[in-house]
Amino acid sequence: MLIENLITKINSPSSWASITRENSMKKKFFKTAYAAAALSVCSFANAGLIEVDFEGGTGGALVGNTYETSGLTFDNAYYSNCYGSGWIAGENDTCYNSNYNKSISGSFLGTTDFLSAILKYPDNGVTSLLEVYDINNNLLASTSVNAGNSLISLNQVGISSFRFSWSNDDVVGLESISFNGVAAATIPEPSTIAIFALGLLGLASRKIKKQ
Image (cartoon, rainbow, N blue to C red; front, side):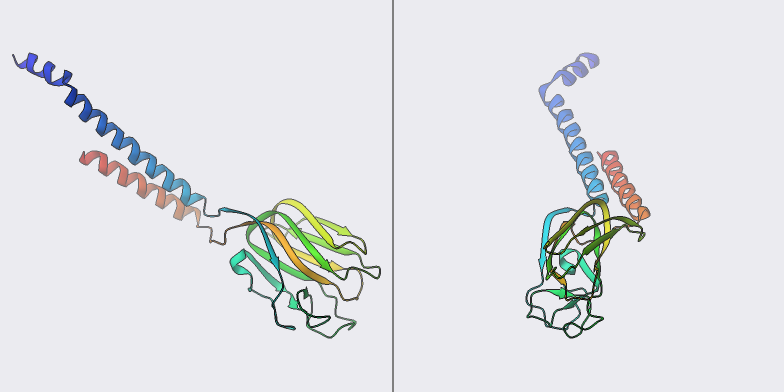
């Protein structure tokens, strides 16, 4: 009689439904834990093409971290106080000063694989040069355009920083910059990621044991 009752209970629809629900809950919990761990590793999200123009800056002011929320900062760049506003140059000085045309440099809060810029006043025999560097400041690639060209661009995986420079001391600068950006975020240390993932697995294990 005991065996018959056990077989009857096992074969009952309610028993199988209970087992199915339990297994389903376990699967859902593991999927959630796995997704959270994966998101912790992917701390930078692709933000698509980002364009930064330099309208609205005060002439002579340092650009610096003004565009940090877009994932971009400048080490050496000033809003122009020459021929109006809406562009940046490499030095805060008067027009046609022999030291005016210094390079413009900056970096990304992450890395990108594309960078382009609209040049301001690339004439009078000026050759414009763009150099890009990796996170260790090693030169990755460079490109140049001759006088009269207003666009310079470069495709290269792993761009962390950049430098624009020119072949003479005429007044030249940038009207805008475009790049395939990444969300401004801090990359966690590998140990932090590992601890977080192990914690999620531990919580999953405890929940299953309780059930």
